[in-house]
Image 1 (tube, rainbow, N blue to C red):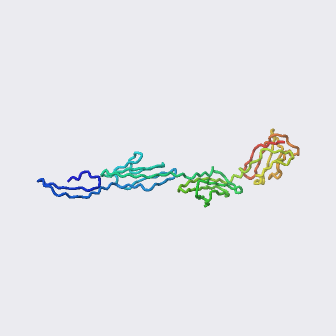
Image 2 (tube, helix red, strand yellow):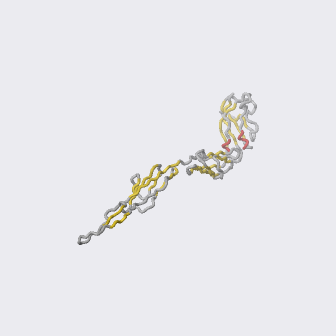
Image 3 (cartoon, rainbow, N blue to C red):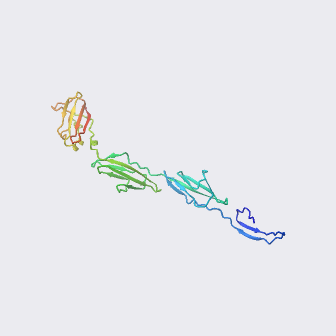
Length: 269
């Protein structure tokens, strides 16, 4: 008995013919042809830099995705429509689509690795791209200030309303107190009360520091007492003013580190 290639639901009418040519009364049969079902789910989204794999459930014999691929699963990191058509063993087909949205990840930049000294503090800012913040310190604000000395790694995770998370990490090295020493490059000892002396405030951290100043011929023109209690006023040790010129100086920190600081200071009148 041949039922033919029935791919459409409907009523079939069957008539039997005997070998003698007798024809029976027809019998009607309701035929339901069911094709494959395909459901790729609701439209979805991913975060930039990630991908999504779509793996449809069902017993299919062949697949055709919108880009021409024929694999059972499809992976993408691009925004747009994903369209699939499938066939079963009876060559019946089904088709579905889903839209993939790509959301931006919050941009976070804590800056380069650095050092921090207790008295100054270091402000770390995770930026304004996020709706939520989580720091390794336990803070949940956009900005934090680090005062602790010593080597440490600080990280932050920043989330947005789309569920995407960005982050960054910065390494904070032990305080280099010598970086605080940044002497003025010139003085104007003209008696006007402005910049008349060479103030080296950072030497407050070095109570035994000594400063020596030399002219261009290498002659010592002035030397401080330990701790630099009296700033240089542009005079020689005998009280006579030095000529307008640039002078070589050496700072001996005398803190047991054998570190010195060498530079130039210019006298302007």
